[in-house]
Length: 595
Image (cartoon, rainbow, N blue to C red; front, side, top):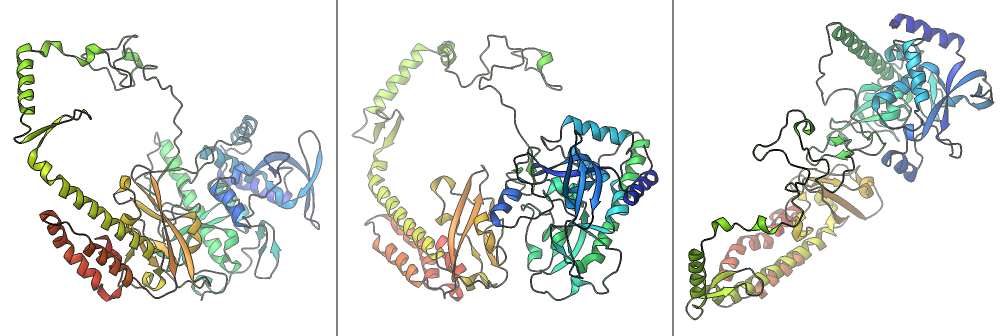
């Protein structure tokens, strides 16, 4: 393999004299419109298609090897020779340096994404380049020699001299800004950040986030420092941190750009030195996975689809595609020791199954010999049991009644139970009626949730799940989060994932007095639910709802029923809390209603 110094000299030669071998960005098919992978989406629908549905990165554009014939610097046009000798003029922004394209293919192969245009011919070309001409391809050397003074940015980036650049901007090393803009006051169109603590080259961001730009790890300032962005398309596992493309950073941050690139180069050098030393020592040690590593967690499967979310560890996803198997469990059942996986064996007794065995199939209809145990039958004992049951069934006038003659749920019911059946049924019906009234009042109150309650730090407003759940999901969800339809409200409202606490972060400057929001919930069985509520800029009014609940309780009566009297006694304390809510706070009122 070539040493880093030899590779450095080749990179310098390509940068100085130019190279006839380059890459060109092309659409995936001849009929598709070309969209540059370094261009950010310009509207909500395009953003959803590219960032949420995964139609981005290697699933949006591909690279093709060509021969560079020349540049027209005035018009920004490059003349290239395609396979077969055909000459074509393309914008200069579509040309990719040869070494950079190889680094992108190397990262794409390491990601194990199933990309159709990454054919065997391209993989063979990559292997040949790595084994002969470009063996020892060092990413940190390329960043140091080519990208340290150059930013891979967006389609239209304006520098401090108001010069517009297209996808590439040189001159980062020319002049440093004496002031650190990260500590200056917030200006219009920008958001405060705490620090920038990471860099990702464009070929890694290409398959990770679907955008071919330099990416930087941003730690946001309060109030966004406490927001969990790990589930977003550019999120990081640390609270209040996201990966942002170069286009989103102002040109005043060039000094920090250089600092992070140099730090990344040093870290990558140390990592490659450790790998060489471990290889010389006879093998690589297993790397410990750290949540604070600078390498981001993958967001998409190898097929380009979003990862399957883990049911309990919400920051973890899975790239799992089970193979299709036959419904018949007998197919493929191991019949000898060689067919069992390593470390497993047959249970003995009974031993290995035969080809005609069906004992492993619990879904089939059982044979009669499997349901009967004639060796346990004793005729005399069976006759004695039948006589006892018959005699007990004839005691109806005294104290029992035989049930199950219609439903086949055979049992004996005492006469005393029958006497209280009517009263118990009435109590159950009235309790359900009162619960429905409380549920209705909570649902209606959530459609008039006062804005000021969300910013009252002495009060806590949680999603009242009992009022929005059905009987099948009568337990607390595992996760609460704003739905994509309500994501536009995320700048002023957050939902605590563990218990659904609604927290107002900053005053919403919107003109709408009514804001419709949807909070989605996730249950352990991967079931999903949602809660719709409305936030209004209006003073709280829920006293009339309290009066309706109290009036409903007073209307319900069951005469001569100790069970109902005990139930009313239990309700005294919650009813008193409803009559006198603490501090006239909406969250306290919701808690009393749930109780």
